[in-house]
Image (cartoon, rainbow, N blue to C red; front, side, top):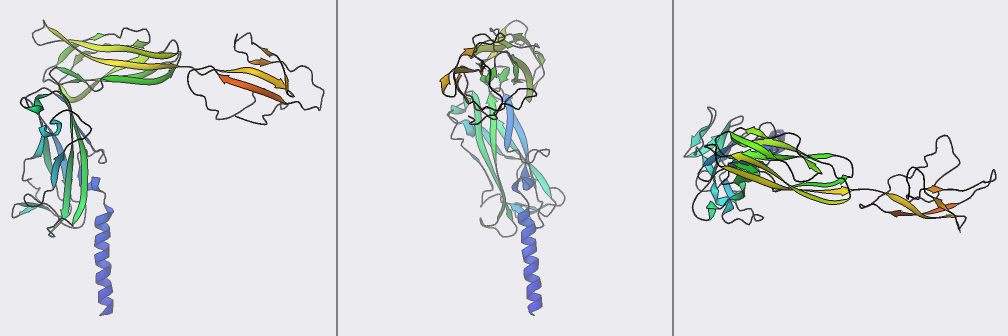
Length: 357
């Protein structure tokens, strides 16, 4: 009798551990290639259109799961509190094709979707680009999608086995083209070097758009390749490479724009973004030097005039130790942090650093 009880307890524990070993992204995902991805990006769209994205529900446990269709909510679309556009999340809806039609291994139980181990199905989330009310406003529309699956047949809220939250985002625009970023930031780039960023352009229409590049009005920024034709597709990002080569210290700003021809071939329109960068330079100069606490002269190296980087010690008797103290000033425009102090003097071991930064 005792042996039987031990076996039952072991089996129950084993079943529970297999169930809980699965991660939520294994049960609920929208990208089979990257199940951990929690951003559902609808791309760009014009007012009055509809876009759909698919979310997969898959039972990867060893127990049957269920999706309530009436009394206990298993999905919801929530407000994104960081978005100040009125009604931004109300244009999202779902699930569609609902009640979900399970695959052959799934079944219905009084209108509820039941998925045995190994069964899966899909649901559709819609972005309905409204043209009335608060939702007619253009801009970036965002929200959160919450999904829950529960253990069957325990029909209460305490038997959740997986829960996912997805971030929903869509660019709603009245232009044929849209841009991912209103401002392209390069941050700090060393003077004389080149960095690049991709300016992503999206086609919100169902037409191919013939775009013509307007180059940035700045010598520091360059678009090496024109845009040309942008194919239709709300989720297709057309990357435009922007190079930034600061020629001096400090902030740089310009505008990058793409001009395109509207259907009919006469009127034109433009999408624009601001580009910002910062020319950075690191330079350390020796402002003062002392040998055995007495000031010594600093000489400007002929290769780096006005840098004050050469210290003449003079003749030193063999075996004698002298101490050099240096005052170093950062004359660059970005912070300096010493990672390693090194004496670079090929073939000589006469010098050492006694007190590093």
